[in-house]
Image 1 (tube, rainbow, N blue to C red):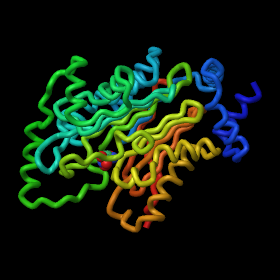
Image 2: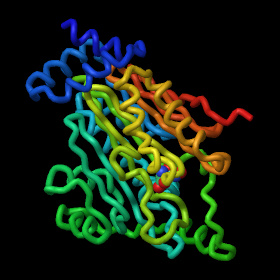
Image 3: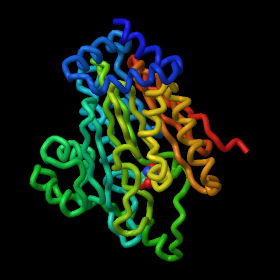
Image 4: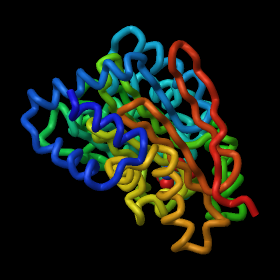
Length: 334
Ligand code: SD4
């Protein structure tokens, strides 16, 4: 019992390394004991929580409702992000996503479960629900990542339907872009972007999903942070989870989501950990004025936080039947 309170305190109060180290030790324990500990944490967090990047109201509500019905964290997160994968108006996720500079829509996604298992797909064409596909890579293959044609063939073998992801609107926008092609990813594109979602279910278990069409008019074959475990998404069910959106190259260089979870392990709140992860980027890269990065995070005590480089990023939070849009604090106040 005492030990569980220590874990809560470490997450909540910024307790130091000694407690952080004892948390690291938790990962070595046999799974039966881990389960008990996780169940005990539930007594602290008995209300499920869903958070996701941007103002994806419907997606987050869907995940929250699923969690309230007792659906486990990973499946709730996948149902949530599917809302945006199927939203043809969203040009940054799933079907309707902007293509690469050759006109191919290629999707990236990953999932991570509360037992530390994960799956990922990179650069997939013709499949809409790539987060669900990433889960099947996790559960149905001996691998963690499948890429391109291999991932697509696996999808068909699993019963996914072939879909044309390039909508007329995205095609027109791309053809317009081709007239004076300049690769210049926008900051806060239409106030939506990659959807990354973290869920805590009724058992207090945390899992997440991240899915995107990547940066508009990227080079053929380009893969960003979103499907890379540790960069776009990371979960440690003993500690919490984090997910990223924005310029994937910069998140990859700092392994941002893993960094946030490790900072929380060592006692930082989700808010402070997100701030530190953004500071790692801005302190090393004076081009930060030209790109956006945003992180959201949740710890085992159900606290959440968010931080980004530029004003304008918001995230959704569902708890106790309320689905709210939260404005993130930001670095560049100049
Ligand atoms: C990527 N992080 O592919 C994703 C896309 C995104 O702002 O979030 N764009 O780099």
